Length: 92
Image 1 (tube, rainbow, N blue to C red):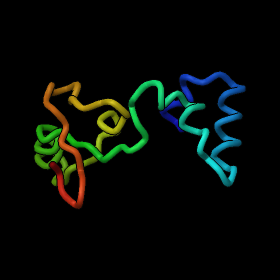
Image 2: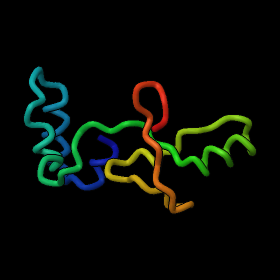
Image 3: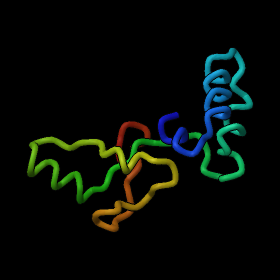
């Protein structure tokens, strides 16, 4: 919701919250405009392999970068490389 809230007016935001807490969330995607945008609702974790290498060098571990997780983002803004998606326990 945090990603979409920046694009919602107060009335629509309240409607989305009410739909999230209701037993049936079937209208939620339409209220958020996900269906018309063709973005979809399933979002795997994504990572840039170049960022992973830099993180390992700098911090000794890799990190999930928030900007890589936004819907419809499939290229690292910093490196211009396609993002790998985490599916079935591995990056593909």
